[in-house]
Length: 438
Image (cartoon, helix red, strand yellow):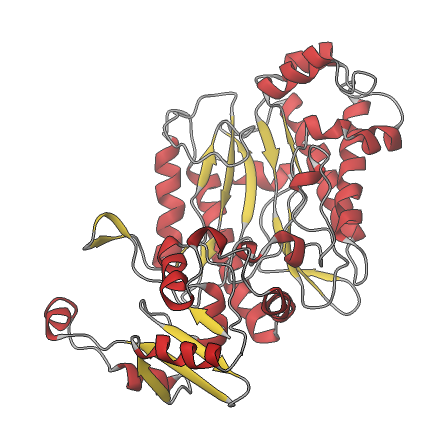
């Protein structure tokens, strides 16, 4: 089994690099948070080998004294340490002996090139020729979080809550989104870790992954904050909040916000070992349909609307995803394995974006994040096409095209008899959010 660690990645020239982030599976098995490493687990010969190169004097001039690779390896239980150039010979010997080299799909171009150099695999074929056996084995291990991992994830969630409370307390009319984004990033960095993913901090919450921070907060708007911390051990938190720019929500904002909270609770109430997460998602969707029917935006039979995917105009994404060393855990290994246990995904709009559908098991950690979004372009398209017109009151929806979007998100772990919300409580009720506003 061949595991390639990550290298430094230049931003605009070789010596000016992005923040280094080790490959999560390499971290999981070997723990070593340094660039330029690879490792082999040889089951037939019962050995683990670390490959890399020691720093030269030129490196030390710029980086200071560093432990040797052998010293670093021994700290992690790796005593068989070899130079990077020796790896090709080791792999060639295995191939000549008729042995299969198992490796995971490469997502960085430098590792695709390494697989070409080491195994002669075209960079365009590294995903296709990766080992399904190894993918399934790694997914099964990493999906089931140990007690130690859950404690580390809770640290990340606690810091993430602090990030959200910071934004809720300081936001006010006239402030740029960038100031809020900088403030929550500072909370993550001050904890000794990093942000788990690029911060979403926007008055345009209808854009699901909005990383633009150039708007100025105005009265009557809401801010959608989606951000999380990554601990020094690289375990992630992932939370979302929505709060008014003013001290309080408007009545119309409260109405939609409460429907989203009800959907959130419906999802939580459905969680249990053995329950497919698809059912959790459907519970949230039914609640959204029912709530929107009550205020006149949807109509017709709830189950028929659900089957037709009519709610996806307001909720075009999924209720949750696995989380751990990656904020979307092991997404590079394929959602069909991580979130679907090999089952094929739906192609229906909305449902095709559900990242997690498999039956839940003790130790699974996931997000719960249903939302309600009013996307003008999507509303216009569906109205023009007459799509799901039997379930949607387009005339009434028209008045909500400038509403934006709402999302609340928490992180949970499945227990032997139910679930537990991870970390300290994040303010999410209308009263809790308004109590923090400036």
